[in-house]
Image 1 (cartoon, rainbow, N blue to C red):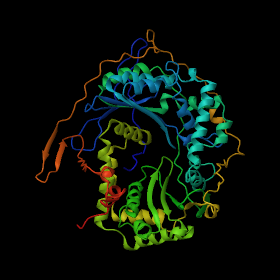
Image 2 (cartoon, rainbow, N blue to C red):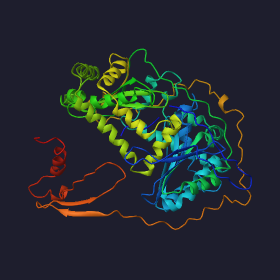
Image 3 (tube, rainbow, N blue to C red):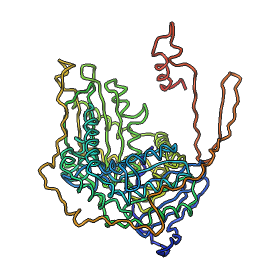
Image 4 (cartoon, one colour):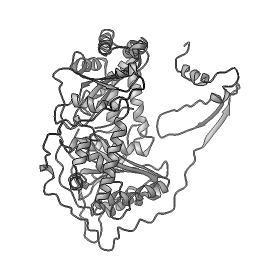
Length: 577
């Protein structure tokens, strides 16, 4: 499904007074009710006195709950010579806090049958767990402890362990044949100093130069409750959940006020082409045109355009590259972020010795494909098919508590909650042929681009076993002086709990609820086909899975190995009708 990311709207803050001896009930600042048959995620939104935004989606379809804490900080908040900090700190947040031992977070969540993780991207860092609903208090306790009590458990040893881990992660990732693609690509797409010009994982020399105080300051700057969104989705009672939230998160002190993050759309003054030699078999070209940030008015039409150009065997990319039998892969996508966007083509061709394309031929063939798209256009049926394909993913959002939490978080983070699932869905329903051709001519036709070619090192042509020099990640900002002004005068403000509350004690876990098993039906056709079905009213979607007993098990005697997988592949190649 297309990424669901998100305008800004101001909402008045309505908070009930909080006494020193007891927590008064908070009044929701937003309440969205369910609307059967509509694409609506019901929720209530609160804001604590310390600035923490809390969104609760009540869903009793399964006895599970998803807790997600998102901090509005990614690599977009970093500066030259201070790259990789957001990702580094994601690692540090799993190294224990004042009341939670190192690795205990994993043990508690996974020991309860739950699942958990954390991720960092350009625009945000999030931490989440999906657990049985009787573990809600425990999940909130865990997340609150590392928000408010991480620094007392921060040690030089943990710092060095995770620094080594992150450096090893980069080494593994960039050691792959095409692993350096995004780093090279973003360096030529974005202007000098733009925070999207470096990767979320950062540069190794920046990580080497960092010390524990740098990471402490990063936490103090960005990890306050007023720069975070807590979403609880699942089998919960909102009022009871808010009492828990107030208990665990309410006393955490407000952090420094995060500065606004301006949009930074980019313009490439002239096309840029870079070639990298690597130990690969198939030449690759990545061609990127700058576009628009998330929720720009042209985003939906650009997403539709990307699908029309590459989706299906009638698309111009398939015809010019795959049907022409010169390439393994030809695809494009429109990716949008908080500050800007990218329309990207990925072409993977056969080696020249096997009838593949040279570098200039890859670019020229793409140009011919785009020319034919403008000349021949596309049918109403094509547009309807693509819009339906993009739209169906929105119904999938309603199927899991994790999906709903993620979407609610993004809508809140990037629009203040003014974007909703039904409004997002409607953007695609309204895309017209004229919209598609307009964005094609505005952002793609005749526009400058950034191109990275990754091709087999010529040494491999004469010696396939030759040891090729590994790609070296060079920091283009290595001679810059780090700007420390944003991290001056930061001090840890310890959380003080109300008298009688002992945060060091894990919450008591009530009995788990039984899992409701859906009713299902069985029948059998006269031709022997067995049918098993179940009904669900959660989304207007139907899933069909056909399983045929066979596979490698039956490849014996006269039937050669590989026949089953070959047949399975052919089943996707269409039929007579």
